Image (tube, helix red, strand yellow):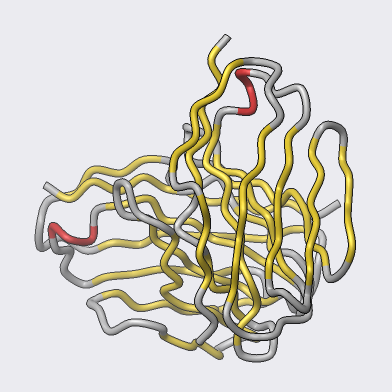
Length: 109
Length: 111
């Protein structure tokens, strides 16, 4: 089974700060997922990436396959970015995902 | 476009009562389907997944069961709920090797 570790577990920052959330995994993968869970519980898929970098608005995800590490960055953070961010990697031929424990981000105005 | 529905949104049930949560997907065919549970303050735990009608894989021993009577319908059931079954239940779908899309979830409280 692929172990997934996220850091930090909790992160509080001021509006406008640059945010970085890290994810490390133990076994080689084909792609990594970043998910966002809002306080109400709904989960949204942010990125699925297998190499390099992807950007969507103020969100940037990077992955280093050799180092088994991915980062999620948020530029010009805003209180509406407050959520739990979860990384996940495939398991058993990509039929299933293994999830990190999540990073709870709070952006204060 | 594809959409995923779950109902009910919230549910309060007494210990020992039965459970049936339903998930349906629109706009795609032969999806992989998943049931997850998230206990309070905890991460996502995969309960069941299905790659086709009638094909169910169980991830953890428990008093829950799942069924897939139709291609785009996934049902989570229990004959007798336990207090420990309380949590937030999420259904998701995906194509093999692609990102997963999650439903809105059902918040279950067992009293």
